[in-house]
Length: 111
Length: 118
Image (cartoon, rainbow over all chains, first blue to last red; front, side, top):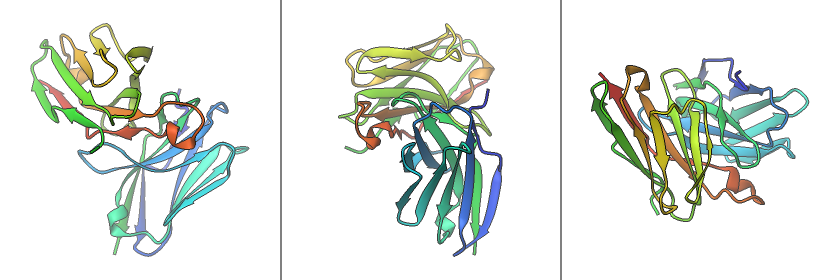
């Protein structure tokens, strides 16, 4: 039962353009959502998060949008930079409990 | 504090051997989590501790797996009689774990221990 889904395994974006990574979830009890970035042979690095009581959170070049009615969230990166090339994981949590991760989207930003 | 640390970073073992991994969380964090990640998948929850109490174990955690956090600080994850299917990246994370602030949901991960069972 995949409660958190990232349906795009990969995304390729030109440097300077916007990257949009998508995530869907099925459990309406989730109350907190997070995005992590992962480089090969390293642990995931926390990027940005959003509470279920909000619909948008912004931190520099990164913005997360939450649509509770659609059970959908997205991460926008603008402008995209080559250093953003990594695997991005969406995760969801309930009551500071364990994180449920999606399968990840590999982002490649090319010059 | 330099973040979550894990040792060893890599472990190669023969099938049937026992292995033990260590995790040192961020010092002020009272929750500690273990996850496992295999190729092409996101991290999967194994177990977590609130201080020294183990509060939940995933059904992924068979009887061959045991985790401890004896003094509420570092934690160890032991796998007995390793199998080739245990080959994975084992990740440790920590968080404040107290309700009331958004940052308390945020888990911070260590670099992981890559286990290869031959």
